[in-house]
Image (cartoon, rainbow, N blue to C red; front, side, top):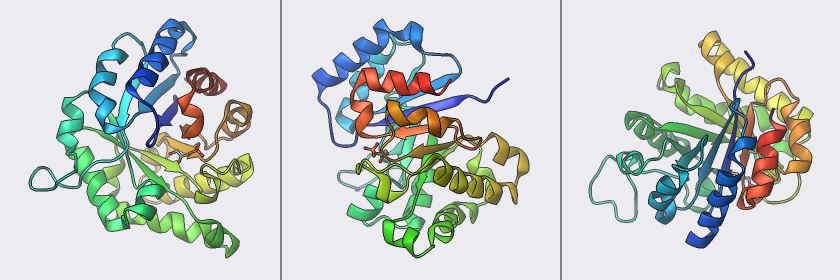
Length: 252
Ligand code: 13P
C-alpha cells in the first residue's frame, strides 16, 4: 500500500472564528473529495482550538493541531499552554521548533527538544520543524544546520521519533513566494531520512517528512512527486479552504 500523505495547515497568527467556521463548512461540504490516503491537519491559533475541535466532528479526515506547546507540564508559566491542555481540547498534533518561534521567541534546540518530549508525553504527535536561513544555504551549511537540529532530538534516543513527524522548512522559502525546487527539497529530505536510518532503518522509512515554504496548489504536485517528500506544512495558502483542498488532492 502506498505511504500515507499528510497535509498540515499552519494558520500562524491569522484567521478569526468566522473564518474558521467558513473553512470547516467548505471542508465538510467537500469531504467526499478528501482522499483516505491523505491526512489533513489544521493548526489554528490557540483561542480557536476548542471551537475547531467541535466543528471538525462534521469533517471526516480533518484533524486538529496546535502551533506551539510549553515544555512544562503545569505551573506558573504565564501565557504558556501545556501539552495535556491541547490534548484535552482535542488536538492530536503540535508544531514544535517553527523557525518563527526560533527567531522571534529565541527558542533554541534544547527548548525545542523539551517541547517535543512534553508533547509526546501527553500523547500528541509533534511535528519538528528544521531548516536553514538563506545565508546558511549560500555558505553551504544547509546539511550541517538541519542535521544539528535533528541531532538535538536524537540525543534523547531515536525512540522519541516514534509517532512524530519532521517538516523541512527552509527559512528563505517561508512566506517569500520562493519555493525550494523539488530537487533541493528532496536532497534535504533524503539527508534527514538517511540520518535517521543510521539509528533505526525501519523508523526512517516510515517517518513522514513534510516540506514547508510557499507551498501552493500550483507547485505541490512537483514537490509530492519526490520520493522522500511525504506531504506539506502549508502556511499562507492554508487560509483558503479551496487551495488547501487542492493541495491535499495534489498529494494523491
Ligand atoms: P508559507 O506557506 O506561508 O510560506 O509558510 C510556511 C510555513 O512556515 C508553514 O509552517
